[in-house]
Length: 288
Image (cartoon, rainbow, N blue to C red; front, side, top):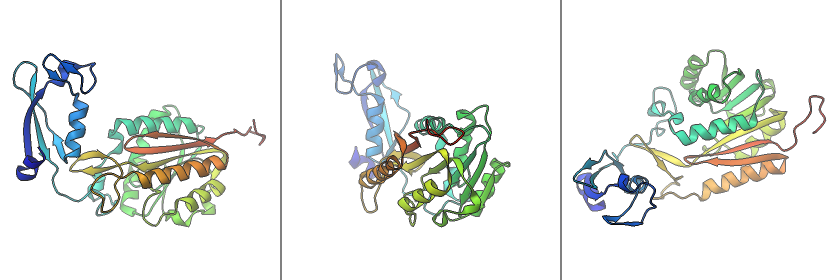
């Protein structure tokens, strides 16, 4: 298959229909042969660098599978994150696991209605469309910061009642921003030039309310020819290598726990670190 893909850019082969073995595990024997579910074929296609196209039935219990090699093109963020670039084509909320875990993380922090939310590296604000799903009956005072003015203009059009500022996260703390009940930072902390420890320290000390929490996102995927491909990549590595991702997630988790937060680690294509105070303060300032 790999040879055919490299030579012609596509390949086809006949397999046992995975639908005929629903409920069986990969590798189980059936009267017709070895069962392998669609998930296995989808993962194999991505490993080979190809799209898994719609299969065709070719007889009872058999289907013809077709693979089409990913086009050789730059990643959508290769030219930056402006609203006129390829990155604007990406809607991360279309990843159901990300959407589910983001809503779960937001609800764990549980900011009050009318509470303040700070979004670091907000870009076009697409992920904020998850707020009505997480809290159908709440509104928030949203403040988003980013370096790209075109992206912020799109975010402002998306959320006209929110406040957006051109600001480098490395300049935090910024006193006039104030304190927030929720700080959201997705796909930001591993960006070039961002010092994770320093940024989280500034946010924790100067920009969180006593009962405030954080939702931090660490990418564990890349986009290839319109497809979300699993696994964090390191430069000059042909295959995914999760060592840097694991180290950064562990450092964030350890640091937040050290300073009195209860931490949850969830997700798949983007790993979410959600932190809430282990001890919730009372309105009068006493700990419960």
